[in-house]
Length: 273
Image (cartoon, rainbow, N blue to C red; front, side, top):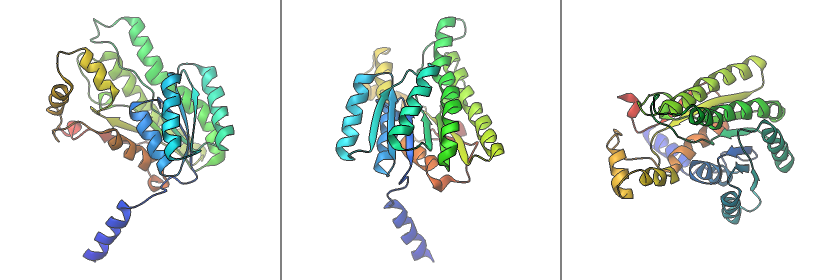
């Protein structure tokens, strides 16, 4: 039995095509986590529409992934705060891929500081990009996805959506909203019998271009900053984009067919403290 278990584990490590035939729409796909998620889904067999407001970087990412997996990805510019653009881009995705059954609401920003120091305009901006966009994405994707079920919605929250910081009032609020909204969407889809699951993911510090933004606000070198952040994590390291991409892959695939309304923490143990 022990030998059989080890053989099964070895087979799992060599798995491929885990989302063969799936059709995915990923926001914030031009770089960072969105790029890693899109690459992973294409690598594992899905067609993917990349959406981002940064059209120049978006095209570069589309070409990069298509060079490795020809014809797997398409791209379209999307302002995730625009209701009309959501409707137009999802229609584009359905037409290009022949359907839609994976939605990854990944676009997000982090601005502002404490409750006293954050301007209301900044608070509203973060809520629009981080939370309103998830509402719009789910609202307009579900009527399409239910025709191509089984489907999966994965919403990128953050460990900051579960654990507060004194200087993160906008981000904490927005990401907490994504967390609970995901549960409401999951229950709605289950009640309607749509065969669409909805879950949230909650990463902590990940080695993405966001680190560059943090560097600009500090006097540290990149490796010094990464080491400082790692000290806050029980595993004593920050995450790689693939750590998040593999989590999304699992939730997007039929391997997680009995998982909905859940939150998956990708935090190196921070939330366990």
